[in-house]
Length: 217
Image: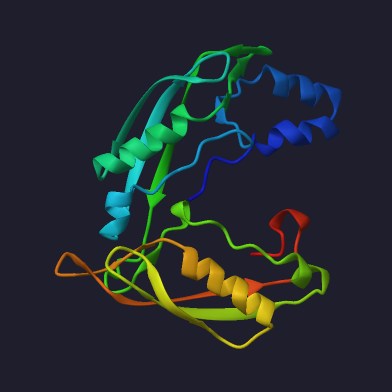
């Protein structure tokens, strides 16, 4: 899900333009924006995710001159989606609106889309409550990379059993098995009830990675 982008490109490009254009830009009102570096997490409501329900939410908040929401209202296709949008707003910091070079109270609004594949016959990985995969340091130093596919049997309470992995470097196979074997899942459903079913997942371990991604994409 996309969050609002950083300040409009105009705020950056005016630095390189003439003094006259820069002055005009400063006179324009800049609306409140979600701080791209200090915002909360948009959580997919577990009740809707369990039932594989997609939806939308529209939120509108009053943002103070100091950059925090004082009042928010949300409308959504399901009440839980509205709560998720409100949770993100109230757990976030904002860049306040400016008029004539001074911060002022204003409003901020955004529309969020929640989408999940509606297949109820396949377990769904619960990324929010699962530890992220860890690229083993030894594999990173040795520049080992591989695409590892894993198959697990996920029981009715969302626990993986009997996981197997495709061929590849042993250390990356074990790391893949550890990730999927220790993860949490939303189980498959049949007639509205959780059932045991197979889960198929994969990890692309890429040794040519940015440092902050620790080898995993």
